[in-house]
Each structure stands twice: as C-alpha cells, then as structure tokens.
Amino acid sequence: MSADVQGEGRDAPSAAGRIARIESLGAGEQVRRLVEAARRGLPSAYDVDSGAFAQTVRRSDGPGAPVRREGTSLRYAAMAALGLSRLPVEEQRSVLGGTTAAELARATGVLALEQADPGAVAIAAWAVAEVAGTIDVALFARLGAEVSSGRPLPTVTLSWMVTAAVAAGGDLLEMATAMSARLLAAQGSHGIFPHVVPADSQNRWRRHVGSFADQVYPIQALARLSQARGDAGLVRAAQATADRLCELQGTAGQWWWHYDVRTGDVVERFPVYSVHQHAMAPMTLFDLADAGGTDRTSEIVRGLRWIEDHPEVDEPLLAESLGLIWRKAGRREWAKTVRRISAVTTAIRPGMHVPGLDRAFPVSRVDHECRPYELGWLLYAWLPPRQGESA
Image (tube, rainbow, N blue to C red):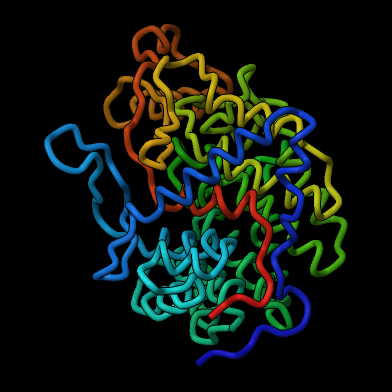
C-alpha cells in the first residue's frame, strides 16, 4: 500500500548550482566529464531483459565485450534510480530500456519487501518516496519494526532509514527523529560513528572502527532531518563528523577508509575509493552546507582532483571510452590484511600501527570494476532534481 508524499520533507535538498559552485576553483569541466561518463556507463550495468542492475561491471581482458556484468543488487538499483531521477525522462528511458527512474524505484520497493536485508528496505523506501513521490507504507512498517526490535543495525542502514523517513515527510518525521536519536547515541566524542549501532554489539577488535561510508551517510541524514525539523543541534552533530573528515583529508585530496571512533584518528587509509572522491563526499558536504553547515567546497574540489592526479598509481581511473570510473586504488594484499592488522593493534592501543606495513603491502593496484551505485551517486551529487517529470 502506498500514499502520496505530503508535507515537510517531500523534496531532496536542491542540487541546483553545484557545478557552478566549483567553477571558480577550476573543477567544473572535470565534473561535467564525470557526469557524462556516468550517463554513458550506467546502461552497461543494467539488464533490460530482467530489469536488474548488476552488482558490478568488471573489465574483461578476453575476446568479446570490453566489460562484463556480474551479479545483481537491489540496493544498487535503488541508488541508480535516485541518480537517474536527475536526468530528463527520455534519457532515463534510454538507459533503462523504456522504463523511468520512478518505475524502477517502485519496482525496487516491491522487491525489497521480500528481502531480509533492512538496508535494501531502507534505500528502496528512500527511492520510492523521493523519486516516485509516494510513501510505501509496508516498507516503512518494516523499518519501524526493525528499529523497535532493538537489534543492532549497521550505521549506514540506520542512516538510510532516517533519510527515507525525511523524504517521506509528514508523520514519518517523528520516526526519523527517533531513529536519529539512536544514531547520535553512537557518535564518538570526535564526531566519528562506528560501523554498527550500538558499537559494543561487535567484537572488541572491530567495535572502535567506522568506515568512510559510516560517516557520510549519518552526515547526510542529520543534515536533511535538521532542515525538515529546524533543529540546529542536528547540524552541529553532522558538522563535527564532517570537520574531522576534512581535518584528516590526505594531501592529494584522499578521503581515507577507516577511522577510530574513540580518538578520531585514521585506522587504515587504503583503498582510496573513487566514489568517495567524486560522489559521496560532495553529495554529503553539499547537503550539510545547504542545511547551514560550513562550506567545504575547497575540500570537495581537492577530493575531485585525486581522480585525475592520484599519487598512489600511474594508471588513469576514468575510462571515458567505457563511461566507467575504476573503483579504487588499493594495496596488494589478501582479504583486507592491513585493515585487519590495524584494527587489532589500535584496539590494543589507540594509534598503534605495525611498522613497515606500507612497504610490505604497497598501494599499487587499480581495481578494474565499477559498481552502478557509484555512477548513480555521481549523478545524484551533481545534478539538480527535476520537477514534475516522474512517471
């Protein structure tokens, strides 16, 4: 059962003028190239026959097509719907084989009800509310039951729940406020969020570690809720996280991977993910600025420049001929070895790292895959919402 979105919270914060905001810093042309790549690359991740988005698109070194789709992801389909909603409807149909972003969003909502993954339910509820302009009552009932259960939740999932409820607006803002209270209770004194809420539901070696995603989605959720409710305290909480990320940003603009909730320090820097640089940091920091937070345009541009000038590897990350942006620059290691080691050493003593890890596991590898959510978030971060074109 669905209802139309009503009242406060129905529209996403305006992205109008975001490219214009970086023109004076010389990054406008780069973003236009990236946006054009996303427009051309998303069709390679979509299977028209099944109506599903791939888990990833990977470079194929053998004969035949230059890339191949692998797996499927409902989460990524919902994120793609959010990004594609920023394109003209006819362009949406071109990418999706005749389907619109709103129709894709509604389809993800139907499929999400069959999923055990609360993250898929949350991102689908967000997409249905924002892109299709309707409230899927069944999806929000699932989210409410999940929070009421008291079970631990991934920070990203809880953040998406807040953002989804804000997108729906009306009475669901009360649900968003209750969810945000649980999120805020987990925030560390230096602004950093853990990977799971509550943090002590994890083992001692992991409970102090939060990823970059565990920071940016709470910032976005709190910023949007603050606009809907007029609560300056939410902006301050989001600002504390953003300030710490910006303080730790690498000299070449890198947004590092894992952080210590207790101290606010970096646990492990690598990989550097391209989506953090071109989409997730800009999307979040612009949302925070729109809610009254500090303007971080300089840091956004510094992060963008890493896509073109990355000291870790010589190989280009933007594959313009394919419309893809390669996923990351990472270490030559097995099964996240350095992150696992660093999580253990910093659990024993904050700030303690094993000497020589950078020499033993150098950053020298480009991951030749591109996930559809990365291109979806790129469009969503930089293009303004389109009014009155959903179908």
